[in-house]
Length: 510
Ligand code: FAD
Ligand code: SF4
Image 1 (spheres, helix red, strand yellow):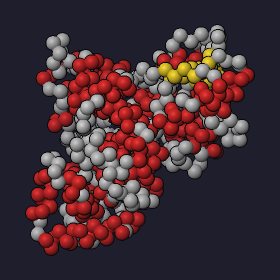
Image 2: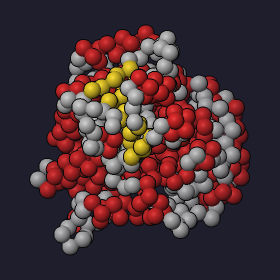
Image 3: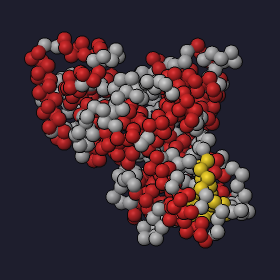
């Protein structure tokens, strides 16, 4: 019995379920760089380099472990443009008994692979992805019967299940489940942020940089200064670097933004977690270990573990529970097009310009930039969810549909009617001013709302509140904001709405 074992570009884990019980002497591992997967969105150039290089390194590691690997190299004129074509061809050539694979992370490709049994006329065994800490069915059971899903409750279940940061008698370490209230400090340059972990490109990565420059020159971003890890060993070194140098301050400055520092105290581990070079449990355990060893405070470690054990697993659960309908949701009825400056960074709004510039150079912006700057602006401006989701999917090195979509459509755009989050994260320029030093470098005045030089976030924020009163006035977490709006005198409110209307008509000029 010979199996074709298909391994996808985000399945680069030696513990992958598709490899369980594999016979290196008989089975053939298949890995393929195909046009359809590289081009279904305008993936950031650094993402393509990272995935192609990491795939090639992983294939070599499998060969070193004795596996036969058929590796399909990218070629724009290849007769095989899709994974199905590659698999079909090889199945015939090798007279394979069946295809074995691990369930794919994305609905689009998952739906295709589930048809292969009929289309290829051979058995296709699709195994669960055991690298996640909550299985799809487990999440569905947890969600059953709940009208609204709240991450915090799911997270507590996951803490209990894994024992992470739990005392032997089942209580949360430190006495609290969540230390978020301690994690809202503004960063003023001290302590200095650590330099990001760097891996200099080896020959394979350099080859991938040339390939991407040659064949994907129209994609967003740049390959310049590529320094991501492309092997599990280097990704583990990146994890160690984070634990030693950034984790101690991760909590304090988790929500901070800087005009000069791209990475602050974030881990920059999502590209490795999402491609399989690192597994969530090893990352969480390393952080928890640092707390037990007295190397990092509880607010940092709990905050970090919550992102992975809580948010990451939670959004994945929601994705699989609700797709494909979720992707079409637009409960706030947004219709506006995405302004072009999202692609160019050509805007006077300093906070937006810095976030988009970092995105272009690094394929990275940290969570608060994504949520409270580029995301917040899209929410306030009423951008069509599909357009902003397409942008987030294209521009980040860590972007995969299962994690990008719920974050953008649910958390940022509130387009799912509050299924994922209890209230929209709408905020005026005041929030950005409180958490960053952008405003002092901006042509707009964050203290103004109606004047010509007023920060656009301010009037747009009130316009958002005004136009969505019917959607949110019953939400207890938003009552105070509505009261503040209603308390303003009528002339002031009219001037604010007029300024917002002008901004909405002139988004491209901002
Ligand atoms: P850290 O701040 O160091 O956090 C540690 C880890 O926690 C991350 O590596 C990540 O694996 C996990 N994490 C943190 N927040 C989230 C979250 N909200 N959802 C899921 N995992 C989380 N994350 C992606 O991995 N891919 C995406 O395509 C993606 N798109 C996003 C789109 C929007 C609009 C928003 C608001 C967030 C998005 N996120 C996405 C979540 C988060 O912004 C990134 O995971 C994080 O910025 C990655 O950087 P880091 O590794 O330095 O994270
Ligand atoms: Fe952003 Fe407004 Fe501050 Fe300018 S003034 S940086 S637009 S929040």
